[in-house]
Image 1 (cartoon, helix red, strand yellow):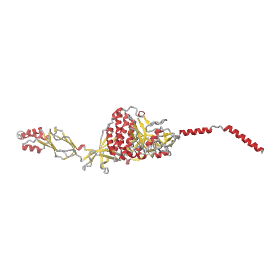
Image 2: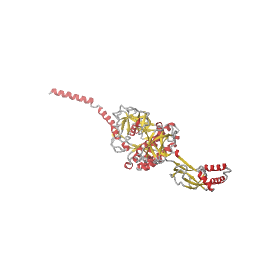
Image 3: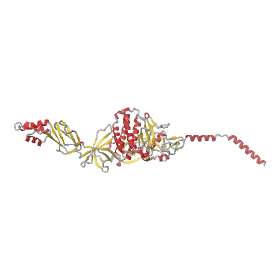
Image 4: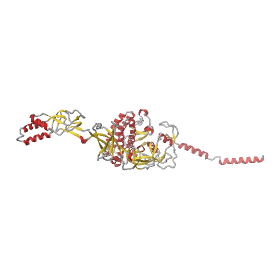
Length: 577
């Protein structure tokens, strides 16, 4: 028993000294403090609205979805790379594809144009003598005339006197044959026929009103005089067009010129009969470039004996096998590309096993259907974002990485308000040019409001008006060559998207072209500036859940992609001022 008491005493003494040495260790408090700091540093965001950053979990203030934790572990990534969560990838419907070669024999160029009169077959019917039109037998434009048909009767004092000279000279033709012949030739120069001259000479009576006959057959395209008008010698009376042949005029952009040549086959369809295809050949390529639109005119001659083509009719042309000199082309879908000024950017998926992305600038070649040739920037086998590119770019901006707007990486957060003075070109954009750009924006807003109201006809009319605003842009104001070169591709894309809205068959198609119009006009405003605050708004459910943006002059959300069905769906993505 005494031995056990000794053991218990030793054990108690050991426990007491152990408590004195280790009982006040600060480890527990240190761990606790670290845990609290870790909780404090955790941020929460919305998968559909990555601009939302909150210090605690809860609901998204924009759409009400549950917030998800922000992944702050980006160890092993390069400075320009960033990572998205798998959940964000799925919700934003971000899709990628492998870059590869396309066979050239499937390449096509699509052109838009219109039917015009064949200028080679046009004739102006003129008056060969001065006088007053007593009777005009052509009543309206579009009237058909035949060669030899009576067009008008004219009273001419000069011709009246010349007839009297003929009657007098006829009585002296034996003694003065030269005088007689000169008087007859004078009447022939005034386009009186031998029969008319002989009738005057035989009857010895002067005619007060002389008939004027058509010298050609065709359709009256313009009536230049009215009954009772006094006309001078050589004055035009009518314009007559022979519509048995017409010209198909197409506008070709500067970058497509080298791919066309005379004699090349072109398939033509009309809006009036889209199921019928007419095959023709390019007969003329205008050697002079239109410096305002940066296009040239390409012409094809069409047989129109059935009169199926009407001057002014919109047409579309398709040219196949335009790259017969190239075996293969490296190309990517147009949905993968973001444009900002003269920069074209795409996003590479760097890690096949993880959603790690990096922005890459590319040099584009010709547009082939819905694809663009790649001159440099990426290689075959690279994996790129083809759907949801704008969402990936937004994530890059929020993380301070290189993006469409940010050319360099930044350690600070990207602000949602963009100051134009920080991103415009080095030389100042003229104020007058910005005012013209403001008028273009006003036309764009009218198109947007028409789509908001689900009215495709008003969208067409306002798009036609916006074309005039585009044509009113004076590119000569951009005296700096870099500004000039930046504007040309943007204007071409804006014009192409606006024309596509005009020619679209329904409002769904109009809205699809409105996406591209919005993107390019945003590029224009960000590049050249505008004297007004503009809101870029975004709906993640538009464009088949790929997301699409639009511009607005106020903060109120009025969604042009869904109209009254989902009028308030969306949020302000950024403010441009």
